[in-house]
Image (cartoon, rainbow, N blue to C red; front, top):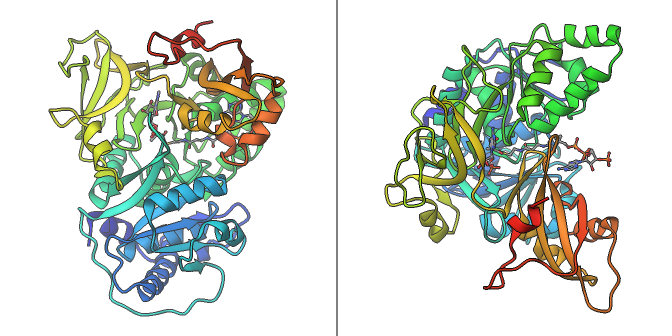
Amino acid sequence: MSSLLQRLALHPVGTDLGVLEETESDHGAGTYGAVGARSRSLAAQLRGVRTSLAGARIAFLAPPSRGYVDTLLGILLAGGTAVPLSPLHTSAELAHVIRVAQPEVLITTNALADKLEPVREGLPVVVLDRPRKTVFAHDAEPNDAAPAIMLFTSGTTGKPKGVVLSHAGVAATLGALEEAWQWKRTDRLLHVLPLHHTHGVVVALLGAFWAGAEVRFATFDPKTVFERLAHSTVMMMVPPMVAKLVEALEAAEPAQRASMTAALRSMRLFTCGSAALPASLHARFAAATGHAILERYGMTEIGMALSNPYVGERAPGLVGTELPHVAIDLCDEAGKVLPRGEPGELRVRSPQMFTGYFGDSAATAAAFDAEGRFQTGDVGVRDERGYVRLLGRASSDILKSGGYKISALEIEEVLRAHPDVGEVAVIGTPDETWGDIVTACIVVRAGREAPTLEALKEFAAKELAPYKLPRALRVLSELPRNAMGKVQKQALRAP
Ligand code: MCA
Ligand code: AMP
C-alpha cells in the first residue's frame, strides 16, 4: 500500500471527525471510520465495474460534501486515478477534461447527474446516492509511484492540461506541510475552496486528512465564515477572500466587530496562496484580527514550494523560504543560477513533482530544463534572509484572477467566434482584490457594432466557467503588433 494510503487509512475508526456538510450536525456519520467504510464500499463497487483499476482514471463530479470525500478516497483505495470535475464548469470544459483524461468510469450525485449526461460519451456512471450493488474484492495495492490524482491547469498553449500527481508526490506535499505548519489531529479546518484545484483538494482537504483533523465545508461569504470560525483552528484562503473578510470587518459597527473578532479566538493559522497577497491587505488583516497571515507559494505541477514560517516572521508581500526537501534556483534564461538579490526565474526540484502532463510527453519534456529542474515561469528575487519576493510571470498569457490560473488564449479563442469581434487580445488588469481583472481588448469586426461587456460575457458563458469570463472591455481601432504580427500585450497593459 502506498505511504499516502497508509497514512490516510490509519486514523482510528472512532476519530471524531471529519467531514461535515454545511447543514450537517450528525457527527457520527462523519467519523473517519464511517468515511473509510463508505469509501471502501465504493472502491469495491468500482472494482466490480472494471476488474483492474490500476492506472484507470475515474472522473467525479460532486459538490463539497461527504460524497466528494468518500469518492476521492474510494478511488485512491481502488487503485485508480482520481480526476475531480467542477460543478462550475460548462459542458465544453467538462468534455475537454473527459477527452484528455479518458476516464473508464464517471461518478456523480443525483443532483449533478444531468450535468454529466451530455458529456458522458457512453461511459458507465455510478450515482452516489442511488442504491448500489456491492462487489467484494481485495484491496488494491497502489504503490508510491502509482498515479493518484489528475488536476487540470492552464498553460501558455492550448486548453488546460492534465497534471498527474503520484501517491508519493501527494504524500511529499502533505508531509512537508504537516512539518512546516504543525498540523495536528485536534485541528479543525474551515474549508471554503473549490475542489478541482491543488489548493482545495491537496493542500487543504488532504492536508487535514493527513493529520486526522476535522474538515468543515462552507461556501465562501464573510458572514458564514465569521460564524464558522468560532469552531475552527485553520483556514486557507486566496487573496480575494482576505480582501472580503477585511472589508466586512472594517465596515462593521464596533460591537459587531468585537463579536466577529471574538470568533477568531480558537484560530491558530490563516494561510493564503494561489496568487499574490498585497502587503497592504496582509497589514489590514493583521490590524483587524491580530493574525499575521502565512503566505506560501506553489503550483499544481510542483506542489507547495515556498512558505513563510509558522514560527518566525511572516513577511508581508514575500512568500518565504523552501519547504522541507524542496530546492529552488533563481536562474537567468540560460539556466545559470543568479547571485542573491538578482531577479530570476524560479526553477524547482522537489519530491512533490508531478509525473507528467497526461498524454502530452512533449509538453512534459519542455517543462524541465537540461538540469532536470521544473521551469515555473514565475520570476522572483531573494532578500538577505533568503525569503523570496515574487515579481510576476514571464508570460502575459497566464492570468491569475480570483486565485484561479486562467489562459488568456483559451478566452480569446471563445471571444473570437463572437460575430461582432474582429480581433481580440485578453490581458490582466492589475487589481488589489482580484489580482488580474480579465480584460478583453477587441477590434470590432468590419460593418458591425461594438458589443457590450454583458453581451460578450453572455456569449462566453456558454463555453467558459464563470471565473474565466471577461470583467472589463476595451474597444480599440487596432491591436498593437510587432513586426512579426504578434500582439504586444505589454503595450496593451501599459496604463
Ligand atoms: C468574481 N467577481 C470578480 C471575479 N470573481 N470580479 C473580478 N474578477 C474576478 N475573478 C465579482 C463578480 O462579478 C461579482 O460581482 C462578485 O465578485 C461576486 O461574484 P461571485 O462569483 O459570487 O464570487 P465568488 O463566488 O465569491 O468568488 C470569489 C472566490 C472565488 C470565492 C474568491 O474566486 C474562489 O473560490 N477562488 C478560489 C480559486 C482557487 O482555489 N484557486 C486555487 C488554484 P457583482 O456582485 O458586482 O456581480 S490551485 C493554485 O493556484 C496553486 C497550486 C496554489 O498555489 O494554491
Ligand atoms: P496553478 O497552476 O493554479 O497551480 O497556479 C500556480 C501559479 O500560481 C504559480 O505559478 C504562481 O504564478 C501563482 N501563485 C501561487 N501562489 C502564489 C503566491 N503566494 N504569490 C504569487 N503567485 C502565486
